Length: 640
Image (cartoon, rainbow, N blue to C red):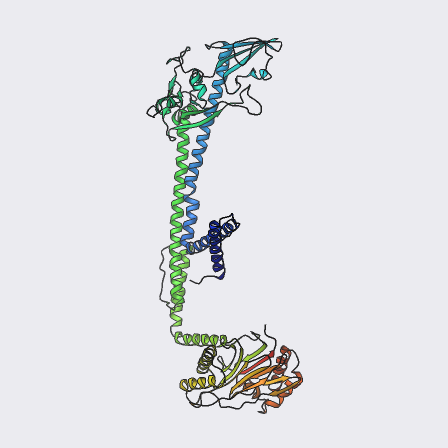
């Protein structure tokens, strides 16, 4: 697998970041290389992770079956646990808020009992004319001014300096105010648990232990004080008792469970404790716990746990939920079967098209699906059968045509583009083959030391054998130049290769010009028409007579150096340019060619090329070309 250039760059950056981190860590003084290396390494690693994820996604979702399966998972499977979790969270929050509501209602009931004097151990304080006249509440000292929060005791509230020490409520009888309060201790929490029906776990240890000493198993009001001893096996039994829940007398066995599948834990927090500082207000906090069975029973049976036929709302809800689940499962099954049918047929279609592309028209899908996808598969089978019946007698000819077309494309790709970019030269070319595969050849090459070389040649004949010989010559010329060969020795090896590869009826003319300096070229020729040099407004041929390649096993080929300065031009061509004929069988000839070069040689290269082609078409406007026509224009420029 090919590695992209950008990937190599990011790999180097990641390595550089790691190296900077290591170098900075080994330095004795604090080095800025460490944070810079961490930044570079993190960015590089993130890029790698993104690319790996993209590659994995492309590989994973290439097949339609994987795409549909993933969509099926997102749409049909994943929502089930997500909805279940959402319902569980919503149910847990609902029961938790129900527990908080029950505790708040119990606090209001306790406040009413305190005002009615139905609770033992109630402490009172009397306030008259803004002054505490008498008090058994430590927070309200006799003779002190009435606190500013006193009007807020029209509703039962917790009071205290550092924490909730008392639960108090005030009664107003103008001009006197009577404050009644009970200590916030285990007995208080036991009464609160009994009234609310919710197990409580106070988060204040002082509140739990302050009046626990001396309490019996039953308070003065007959309240059963039950502590959870499930932690009694721990090393610190006293701490375990402090952390135990206080259960109401009516607690069910499952209320004492710790499993979230059986009970709901919640956190109750009161309004700010009156008497605490405004900058740091205190609240009373306690964990609440209620079993699912008890919560659902009280929610749907409105407290009538013992009555019969009172759970019908819960049963109705479960029935409707079961029906919805059944419909959803049926929909999932239908989607699964549909996806399976589609992917199965599509996979067969994909495999069958691969067989068709390979020329095997006997493949059939033979699906049993009775839908549009099945109709598509059956249409494909009909098409394959029709193709198999009509193309058997044409297969050989089409294979030959395809091979010729491929050979023609390859032959065209052997030649550079009409305006190829070449070091030291500005180029413009024109190639017009007389057949599908011509015998003309031109190329822009580079020697082993980086010098630019221009080659032009013409192989005798036309068609596929000629194109093969052109390909052989191009490959040999490129290999010899890259190996350091040049001039006459290079042409000698080319001649030996072509002589061995062809008979005497096939040969090749070849001209090669190499830029040897900023002012000179080295020209080697093997029977090709001489190129023209246009310099200072004059066009002159660079004559260098020689035999073509491939006629004799050994032959010397001349090489000569010619001047070529900046701005000078070279015009390469093949004999199809010179030998094109008009209706009177008169050739275009060198004289007309040189006249065009003399008159238009200083024009821009596109204008000069068009002028030459216009002159050729004017000379032979109607007759088809009887030979390949190739024209290559080069202008010497400074090396980039």
